[in-house]
Image (tube, rainbow, N blue to C red):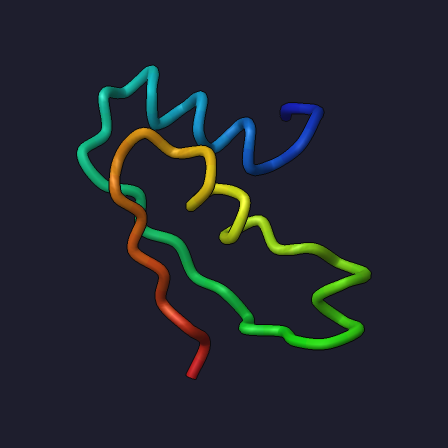
Length: 58
């Protein structure tokens, strides 16, 4: 179990593994839900040193 921001943890693990790509799923929330909950996927895209592939929930 880890504490802290999920996006920071995902980025740190990707760096530790030497990842070439991060693949993530997203709910695709917008508006008030996005504002209140934030977006881990969006934060990972901004922080990651490697490409990030986002798959939207069907």
